[in-house]
Amino acid sequence: MPRSHHRSESVIETGAPRPSRAVRRRTLRIAAAGLTAVAALTLTACGGQDNPLQTGAAKPFNPAPQVSEDPAAKGDGGPQGGTRPERGRAEQASAEHGGTGTGARTSGTGAGTSSAGKRGGATGTRHTACDAAKIRIVAQPLKRPVNHLLLEATNTSGAACDLHLSPYLRFGDAQSPLAELPDSRPQSVVTLAPGESGYAGVLTSSADGSGRNGHTVTSLSVSLPGRDGKGSIGGSTTVALPGGSVYIDDSAWVTYWQSDASAATAW
Image (cartoon, rainbow, N blue to C red; front, top):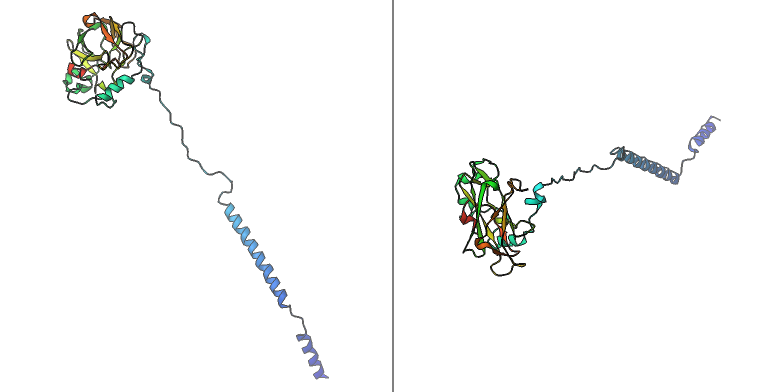
C-alpha cells in the first residue's frame, strides 16, 4: 500500500499542463508591441517640450530706413521764385571736358590755384553772402573759347563776403535762370575781400550750331544766391551786354563762381 501511494503523487507532479510554444511566442509579441508604443509616446512627449507654447519662430527686426528730405534737392528756387532748367546739355559739356559730374575740379587750371585768402573754405571762415547791391558785375567778351562771356564780380563794400554757387542769369525775358555747369563747382566757396573779384564763364551758344531755339537778346539780369542756394541776396542787377546784344540758344550755361579768370574760362 505505501508503494502504490508514492506512484500516485508522482503522477500528480508530472501531469500539470505546460503552455504551448505558440502561446509563448504570442505573449512575447504582445509585450514587444507594448514596449514600442510606450517608447513612441515618450519620444513624442519629449519633443513637445522644445516649444510647449507652440510659438512661431523669431523673425529679425528690420525697420524701414528713414529717408531724410534734402531741402536743396527741391531746386535752388532762384530769384523771383524761378528754378533752373534741366541741365542735360551742361552735364554733357562737363563730360566732354573730361569732368566726372561730381562738381570738384582739381586740375592746375582750376580754382585750386588761387590763394587761400580768397577761398573761404580753405580757412574755415564763413562770411555773409555777397549782396548784389554791393557787387559790381561786368560782362566781357572772349575770343577764346568762342561764344563765351566772362562775368567779373567785384566787391565794392567794406567787408569780405562769399560768392556762393553760380550766378542766376536771365537773358532777355527768360523765365528761368540759366543752367549751371555742374562740374565747374570749386572745392570751396569763393571769398571776396573788399576790392577783390570773382569770375564766372558763360557759354552763350554752341560752337557747332547744334543748339536749338537760338535768338538774339539785348538784356541780362544777374542775381546772387545765398548759402543755401535759395532766393537771391540784394535782388538783381542789370548788366550791360558787350555790343548791346548777344546770340543765345538752349545749350547755354554758366559756371560756378571761380577765384580767377583762367578757371572760369577753362570750360
